[in-house]
Image (cartoon, rainbow, N blue to C red; front, side, top):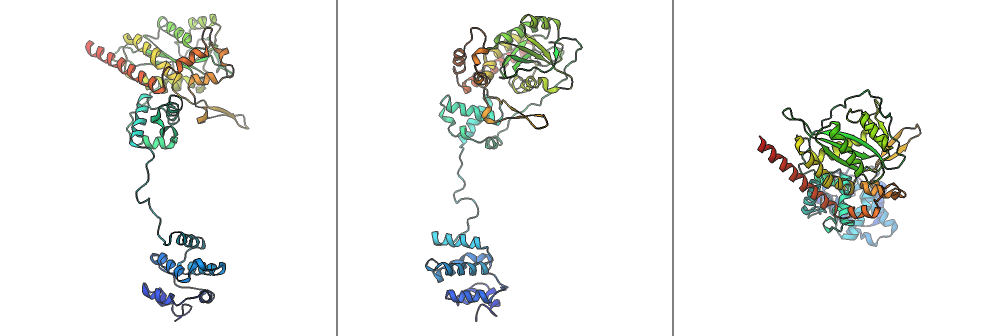
Length: 432
């Protein structure tokens, strides 16, 4: 019985009937004649028997010893009877020649996928997140890169090369406490003080954006106020705390902030809050020859940098809980000694690139290569020393920046903040 005619029913039968009938083909010429005669084949080798069938055919015809024409005929024959594509049959033949057998390759490796990041790495990532108050993925990666490359901490050998997307995957199994943000509208003022426009630093540091953050009221008692000052070019940031928002408490703190900035102050930009739009502030800035600008109506981006730092730095590190006014001096000392050095010398942040399209619309693009600490951004400016105040040098700032590693600075801030809040809590309980 030949395969080209009435044996279709026999080939469709399972098991040894297929083996017995198909085995009658012994030469390449017989296979070619079968292919030429069986233009329409109504049968196929069952899917479960494809690999054993291909092995038997290749073994019987000695495919390795066949010439180019014979190999081509065998490929046509196998493709016709198995229903596989020519490419798939070619791959299976290659596998048979290399390994001597055919096997499915679906599913994971027999011993599972190898884990690149160990439990120690995950614990180290959690520790960094706790110390740095859960920075963004790119900023956290930059901190770990700096720990390895600048400060030589070998524990970050693998984490320094992690992708940002996988960093978030590792964070997925850890519960992170997040607090909802609550913003209140700034009180408008009609005083004709300051120029109503956005500042134009033109790449020069010294144009400060300033805003206030209230630490909440409780039982009719007011909390402290934080004053947040951020440079528009380098993002150099200083936070100070005052007992009240009154002029007597506010002006010394603002003066302290401006004196703490290492470069010369050229501009002072605030929103329309009445704590800054006053004749006293305007007169004081005029004496220092500092440009005074304020935000425009319906232009929320005029002071967006300071607003964003309110949440990313002030609220993240000092929280939302009520802090009584009598602790303003202690909180201010914590900010000056721990928070401000950490933010400016050890906390990386994005410096977006401004792209103007064909219609003149500006768009911001952030790249990992442009992520730096504020002090690194200051140093990267052309002839950065020309912007520094008299008596301040780059060497002095370098020594301050390398005095401790990023993790050590975060750990010092973490301990100082915990001690501060414990003392506030103990004093509050004692008074109650």
